[in-house]
Length: 151
Image 1: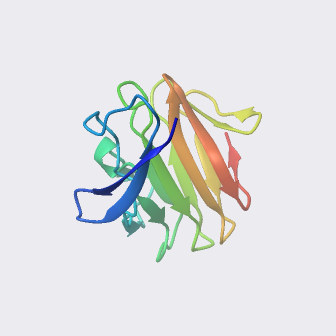
Image 2 (image 1 turned 120 degrees about the vertical axis):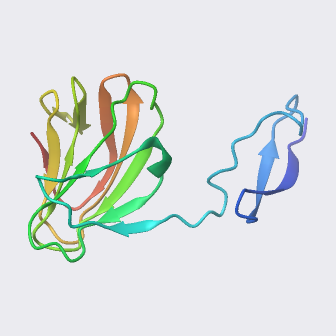
């Protein structure tokens, strides 16, 4: 059995390569959204009174708190109907950032889990995290470089 390689082009016209295992036809649906795609970097200074509300369409984007004069707030969508949605954050300003879950959703970092509608917070410049809707009611920080905590 051999692996079949195919060149592909995504919606942005970027080219990548996928390998199909034996038995998978080249006409089968294959998700190529991550192949060679450049993601959007968005700086937000939105505060507690008007947080940046993230949408499913924002999945995969990178967010910073560049230019913040107070802690930047980001509100996650509910995990319901958003499984697999993911966001990335980089702390670029010591005022920090806060990522807030809604409703009954919790955020897990290693063995620590926030309260329902809890949050992740970091004021450590250089901290980078990736968070994914891993299950109904559960956001998981699957990567953290630097320091932060959930509450």
